[in-house]
Each structure stands twice: as C-alpha cells, then as structure tokens.
Image (cartoon, rainbow, N blue to C red; front, top):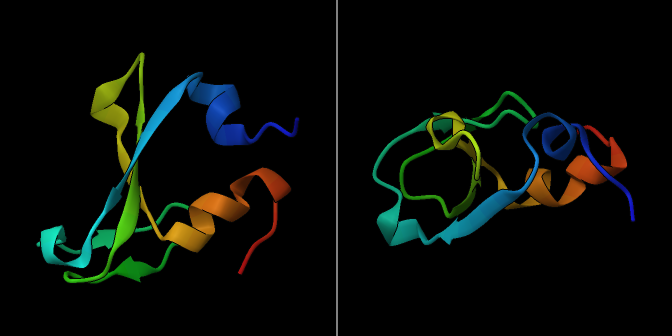
Length: 71
C-alpha cells in the first residue's frame, strides 16, 4: 500500500467529510495551496497524535496525496 508524506509525518490520521452547509470558514488546502471557500464541502484530516495539527483539504487533493500528484 502506498504511503504519503502526511501519514509518514503524523502517523494515523482520522478524517471527516465536511458538508457544504457545515463549512462556515475559508481555509487553504495544504495539497494545492488554494483556497477552500466557505460553503464548499471538503475533508478534515486530524493526526491522532497531534490533533492541533488538523488540516482542511479539498476532497480531490486528499485522495491524490498518496500518488504525489499535484494539480
């Protein structure tokens, strides 16, 4: 199974899909460095050992992270 840098750095990661109606703030996706606007569904990744390092990702960026693909 392919591993990605996120898992290599932080170990086990819990994820949750945020629905558009729940997305009340803007974030910057670490996968592409582009904005995730308020109102857009996305994925939140929370390292189990470091929950304060949670990050908000576009769904597609989170899915692509293991391949090393960029936009």
